Image (tube, rainbow over all chains, first blue to last red):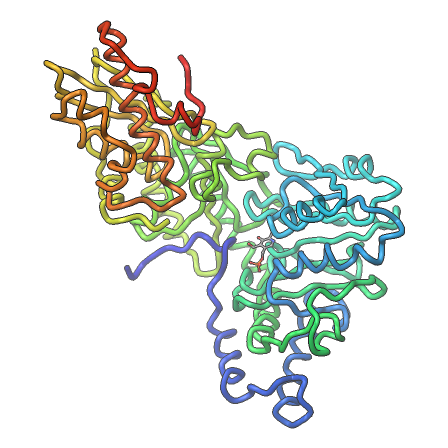
Length: 388
Length: 145
Ligand SMILES: Cc1ncc(COP(=O)(O)O)c(C=O)c1O
């Protein structure tokens, strides 16, 4: 298939050409271990540190506040588990939201088994955390709040400035999972009251295998991976310098092109949403409309049918999408995010996420609008729930 | 999802989709909460299943197993049809991914329910566990109408 259409950028993105070219010499020529003293090592180190500086600049941080990790998942794990010891005198209560990524939720579930108490803030029908709910949930023994910047399934952008301020006023560490928003939304940590922030390169056209955790100066974090002296002794393991250097380049380009890209992609997003609503009866949009939604995210629930069937049909036509149905998660429950915004199981099973990216065009949107209504019609004609 | 070619064929081109008006037996299994419902209609003449149709809300495997079970039962006697196991349905499809095996339970059980429904309506003797495999291990809640 030559003209496949990729609409799953929230899952991962292709490394863009400029980034790929930039990375190439570091596989074979500049391969030195950045911890080595010789010229090979020094050379690599120079580029590694340049990447750190670039990433810091992109999010309004100091280079020494950027710690490299292997992924967004590792950054989330580290942020949460790493601050507990320093807060042990204060307590064991953590606040998060019901719609976090599993990298956060499963980490917290693990901590619950170790005696920590976790409050899961609800979200409203559009998927927003209410800052007042956070205020109400804070206790004397609350040590950490972890709320994502933008949700990976429904694209809702959380008021992290307001939430952060509340944490600051209460002297509580605030972690933000910015894996979906980095390179897409402006992040300026000079002004944002955020202590820890997770990034992942493969979501912004960088390579897989590189992530970063911003740790604000003065925030005490414990090492999770013991080893050599990498990352100031806090995260052992020889750097994946090729991927890290690629991450720096990718974020730099994403931030440079952010405004222009968002303008174009959010237009495609709205064309897609409007077009689906015009062509498919009994459909609902999951997540908000407008500026409070990630520019690349479309998530709809289509009544009477199940998501995996839609994905398979789309896939046969070369269109890649995703769904929050149970059948795609391998469990019997549909997405926790869709349930948290109040969908019934039945409606959640019929969800479809289309996440746009740089290489998508109006022709791609047109193609989806052409084929999806037919797929829906076909699956509905098979559904015992549909009285067509 | 790694589906066999056979599964994809039955999913893309399902056989015997629809309803049978005045069906002799109807079996419904699953519920919308779990993400799959199958409704199976059968016509019976002289103890032989002469027609079967289905409507299914569910994933690719649920639709493919529904389609396969209709193919397997047409032409079978009631006794033969009762013996069609979920494994037989899965095998006829060239296997199912492990997480999808419950979909084959759904189809085999809907079949047993349809036969049970027919026997019940016609005053024929039924054993307790004739009805379905899953009521013995409670895999899916059963929708009662
Ligand atoms: C919001 C969010 N957090 C964390 C992750 C995990 O990132 P990674 O794939 O780099 O481990 C993802 C990616 O799926 C995500 O969308």
